[in-house]
Length: 188
Image 1: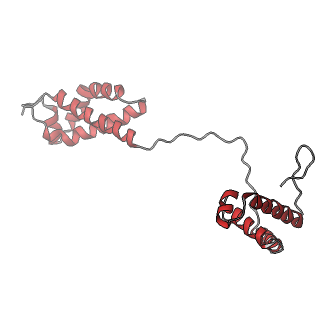
Image 2: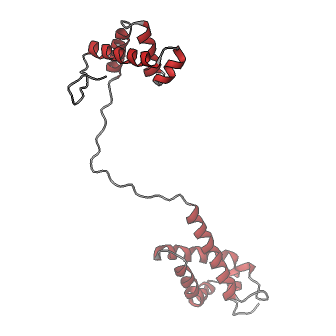
Image 3: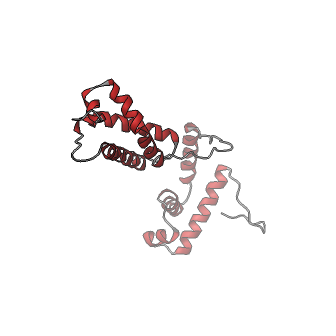
């Protein structure tokens, strides 16, 4: 081992070796880190990480395999690649645009909903059995008029009429206004 081998001196724990290392190789490490880092702050973090790795790896240095500068550049390159991979794997977070006005939707009162459902159920019981069946299949089970026709064996026109008249009766009983067409007719 020669006295000019700074890495061996670092491995031995000599305090003067750290200053000699920084004086000789900080420019190399900084230039590599700056070239491969998106911001100066990231480059500073990378330099510290590289220096720590050099201190830990100094004992493995073999001058017969590579020059000190090559060994240090290789450590720096590996650390910089590892940092880039960590950044690529990290979930990306983007700021959401600030809403101009956030209006909390009024949450319906559960008691009110329960009362409304009881009123609807009471009105439904006043309908003819065929109207009840058609409205139940349509509103509760989400079936189309064609599906109800197939399921019940009723003609499609009858299913549509039963649904329309049943809804009109329910709306009247609940006091809901009937929507009007542009010609002034009441629709369902």
